Length: 138
Length: 252
Image (cartoon, rainbow over all chains, first blue to last red; front, top):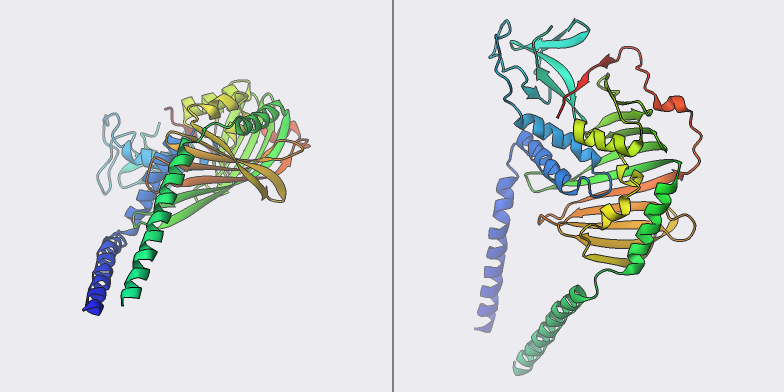
């Protein structure tokens, strides 16, 4: 009787441990891109919390700004859409953290513009991060 | 059988007493006098000494703890070399997972340069380091390595809302014997290792975010202190290398 009781307790414990572990397995299936973005989001949040307090939270800012860039999509509406080839033109002032694939660069008035998907982009620093913003070449 | 039962009961009782003792001792510790003047004194000596340094160069190794959405812990590392010459010159280069960047300030302009992207941006800046750091942060959203070491009011900044200050003990960081200090304030715990004897220079920082269950930290190990660096003033003025393009800062 005693042995059965002990065995039951052990079994229940093991089952409970398994249940506790299962959600972890699900989380591991998160796509990689999303996982990386998750890092940026967390880094951003932490940067704010610790940022100015001490140490050199500096480096988080790169990630923080990138996250901010992704949230800061909509800006002034386009007066006229840029000459399109393919894709949908974005509003002027849209910030992206990386150029889309297949951009061609052209200097206009001393500024380097990157053209792809019907948009012109130029590189700017947003805080410590290098980002690309849609613009109308002048 | 009876003996076994008795033993089990006795063992459980002992465990229970131990657990209770642990809980009680933690509570007692938490209630202990919180701010040890010895700890704050060492911190003040350090900040006073640093703000009195006219020139210094230093190497820092930062580790940023993070968590992936999958729940795994990862670290991002950034290595930095910094040269400061008061009142108006600063040079910092940073390399790591997230960044490859050189910051220079010569008292007139500040420049951010990403060597691997071959771009830089320049902006007129205030004439003193501390004002420049404020301007960089508030107007451009820039952070500069070891900025905390530069501010002459670093001590009151660090001590804001501090609820705990203790000397944890002595440690040796990079071969240097240090006092290990722990401070706590709402949401943040920070530890500082300050050289014991000789110049009160910091050799390590750990800042822990206590506001989330992960309790992630940023660790900075500081080495290669040089308080008499021989550096030409030209080092602080950015001269764009061949093939590098100028871009602009996005206003905040």
